[in-house]
Image (cartoon, rainbow, N blue to C red; front, side, top):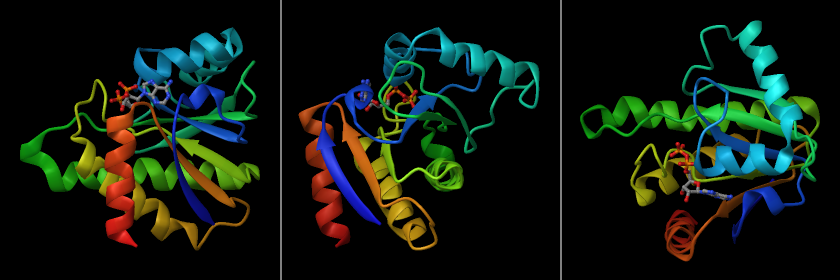
Length: 176
Ligand code: ADP
């Protein structure tokens, strides 16, 4: 599995699965979540509501992932995952939850047969995770999980602005 980094808008990516940095309600929010629902249309929200009415009555817990249709997006699936809200006092424990977001998203997408998957920098927006630490967890976790996957050939990190892209590039080169 190849790991690639691009700067751009995740809703524009031509990949099989797009990961959404959702909140646990699954009913929409700002940031990436808002952009995905706006461009993907009401079908995505309809499936999210159905998930809430069924298995995820209490919401999707942080660190877990679940797939829906991607509606009008070019992708086939949106994989919703809920990142942890940053709290320095609980850094170690929450790092494990953030890593789990990436591992579970890969597992769900791989199980669906996705060959390509795009990730945003989960938890680095409204959830305030410092970019560098988030990049280390994201890149390290995806690289480690890559070996055990069946169908995914490319995991693409899509960084919204130049600063985030620069941080991810630097961290990736440090990990190599
Ligand atoms: P969280 O609540 O997990 O922090 P956010 O959506 O607030 O999620 O932010 C996560 C990251 O996604 C931030 O770095 C933000 O700049 C970035 N982002 C926002 N919109 C997009 C987009 N359309 N494509 C890719 N990344 C985006």
